[in-house]
Image 1 (cartoon, rainbow, N blue to C red):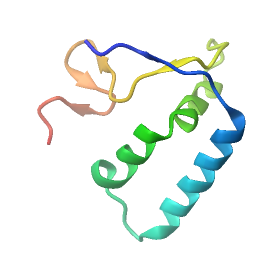
Image 2 (cartoon, one colour):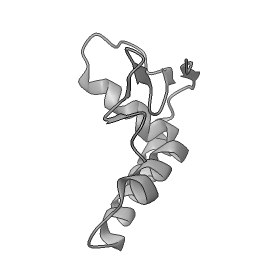
Image 3 (cartoon, one colour):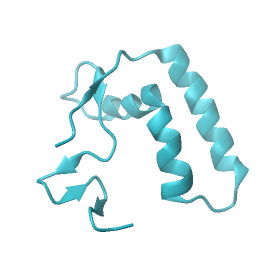
Image 4 (cartoon, rainbow, N blue to C red):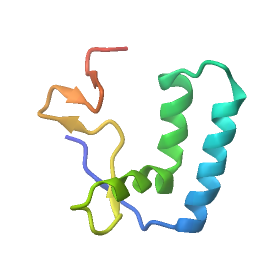
Length: 83
């Protein structure tokens, strides 16, 4: 089982990562989730933590995991068996 990774949210770095995300979105007409989006978010820890602001019960943005297993069968939005 994958563990959550500790990280202290940095708003200044998050803004920089947000600008990088905007550049990525403008770089191609079609982006691949596996080749473009996922690698970008794996290296953008503060931008990944930002989504926590939309969940009212999360008080402190201090840990995350990409493709976190849910109920042992799935990771976020795809089955383990998917390429």
